[in-house]
Length: 266
Image (cartoon, rainbow, N blue to C red; front, side):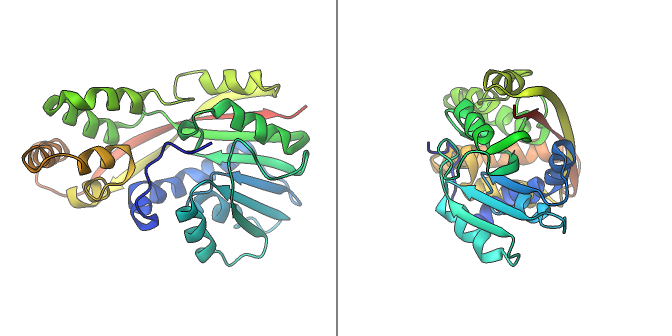
């Protein structure tokens, strides 16, 4: 099942989101829990934020990681130096592992890009042993991503064609309160708990904030790349004004909230 995320380059993704997923990964791991000897699956590994954070735990026996994008698989494989980590290209909705293979399966900022997200949860549960844990996190785009919402809300004031794109951004799968919990329960997981995790996205300057979007990364970047020159110039100026908010250009910090959910396989 293809991802709906737009990938231009692994380096561009790192600037757009990878650096922030590194901050979120330890929070998801703490929420999911770990034990020495665990075999863990990272579903949708991207450039490796979760897998490489897991590898900081010396007691883990095995870390398997999959991603649908060959761009991400190649980048993560190139960075990997840990023999416990095995990275491969695969579909989250058709995991290439036998039943009950892992102690835990985790997914960091992925399920909202999977059109059949419930199927991905079902597959994660299938490959985890009874008593093991399935855990996932997705951004709260509507209510928890102030920095990214500022971009979208500014753009739609200039171009009504962006309205359906903003709606799609705000209400991707698993992003409504309780939606991920409902999906976990519907897939037969027990002791399901949903919470929120908070990090801060800290930028050095407007260029640091806007450059990945200007380069075409992510859904907003894809939209911006398609604008005609005059409208593109207006969008760039308006987003800069929103970022600066009347103050000189420089560092800015945005609170960023993710939904997180975990359940036990029975």
